[in-house]
Length: 273
Image 1 (cartoon, rainbow, N blue to C red):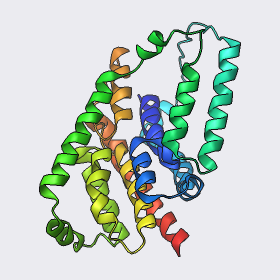
Image 2: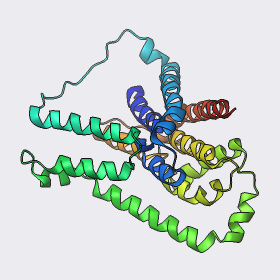
Image 3: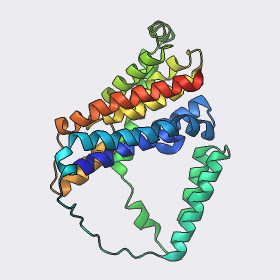
């Protein structure tokens, strides 16, 4: 159980480090125009410290399992067949893609070009790759974008935006708290879209966007429903006969979310000052 929790929580925390770490960061990168390197410099340390906090907290909550002398039983997978030329090509493409990100190229354009180049092969048929795509997940995200766009057009009128903007979103603590709560109510990607009109009114929009990126991502650890990564891990665990309950996850995820968001706020405030 603790190892599965570590996988889900580490996936959430690690994704805060870069613009391409998760979907909401990609949106924020487009809205804020923060350079890829500057984004990573601001939030990669938060991810690194957050991973250390995750390990410590899980070890503390599961002292008996980590403190015992029973050896961890590993199920060895069947040996995978690796096609050397295709593996070398993949490593080179990923390396060039990361270099292009840090060079300031638009992430969407770079990802599309890299993905298209990877599909240019006769070794693996394209149909096999298409079968691995999670189409229901893509459909869910498309539906979220439609719903949030309708919400923004119908309810977020200029007068409403101006009124809500006076509620204290200029304070980074308030902004992070609202972002965390909203991310667990409607998911982090719609939360970023809903907050877009208000973040633009902040005195330092780029710093405010970094706070939103940090809080919306780290808030994914609050509950088992907080992020897609959590749901994937829960689904895979259930297929192996392991059930991760809501409260089982929450007793680690709640303090972890609070600690990491506070650390993130402190780091971003120290960086500005």
